Structure formats: structure tokens, C-alpha cells
Image (cartoon, rainbow, N blue to C red; front, side, top):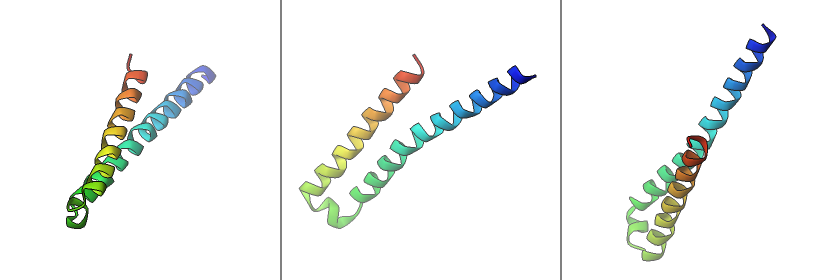
Length: 71
């Protein structure tokens, strides 16, 4: 019974960690995408570059997390 409880806690901790690891880059990508849609940002090449870079970096981060956890 104690072993089962420990396994359940480990599973819950793992799922919580995975959820956090995925939500963070997804939220950042979403916010950067929303910023790119604003007229004042899309008219500025510097801002467009900045937010585009954020998206690329977060996608790379997310891909690395996926590779780490699902190898």
C-alpha cells in the first residue's frame, strides 16, 4: 500500500512538472504571436524581429524538452 502511494505521488509530480514545462513556452509563444499581430509592432522591423526571435527560441526550448522527456 505504501509503495502504491509513493508511485502515485511520483506520477502526480511528474505530470505536474511536465505540465509546467510545456505551459511556459506555449504561453510565451502565444504572447509573442499576439504582439506580432498588433499594427504598431508589425510596422516596426526591430519589434517584428524581436518577437519572431522569441517564438523561434521558445519553440526550440519546447522541442528540446520533448526530446528530453520522450526519448
